[in-house]
Amino acid sequence: MKVNQKIYSIAAGLLIATILLAACDVKKEEPKSISTQEIMNADIAFSDMSRQVGMKKAFLQYIDNEGALLRPDHLPIVGADAIDYISVLSDTAYKLSWKPMHAEIAKSGELGYTYGVYQLELKDTTLKGTYVNIWKKGNDGEWKFVVNSNNPGIK
Image 1 (cartoon, rainbow, N blue to C red):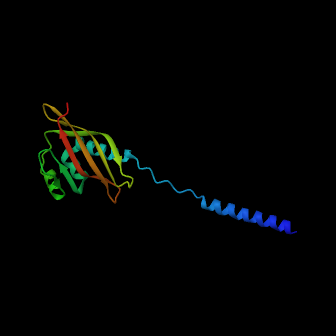
Image 2 (image 1 turned 135 degrees about the horizontal axis):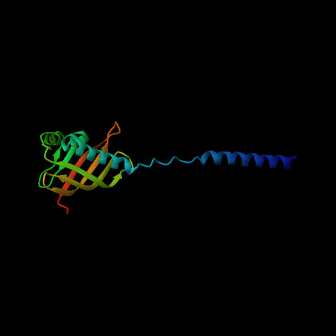
Image 3 (image 1 turned 30 degrees about the vertical axis):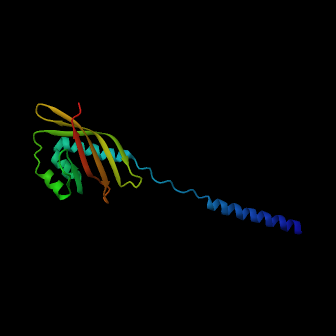
């Protein structure tokens, strides 16, 4: 009888150990993969709005309250000053559009950037250049740019 009790005790111990190991083998949930397509879509929608209703309305819609504009040969224009600067621009004589070529989003999902090529269509000519937008995702889930910079002059 003692041998059977020993076997039962060992079997019970193994069963408990197996149950405990199985309980500890809970797989950790992988962090959500944040798609760069989300930020690309924001940049494309920004460009589409600029082309359809004008650069001014698009920039006012997509700039963060603390957003900065970096322009060649100028100091940065930030926050309310940037919004005021955009508000007084006249965009009736041209169409501005761009196409993102690349995007990245931080693992946190709250910051990212896009860059690509822009096209400024004037009455008689078309100018092209490069740009970069740094984006921040708001509490409402909407992407707004916190930095917009461009460099004119690609052929």
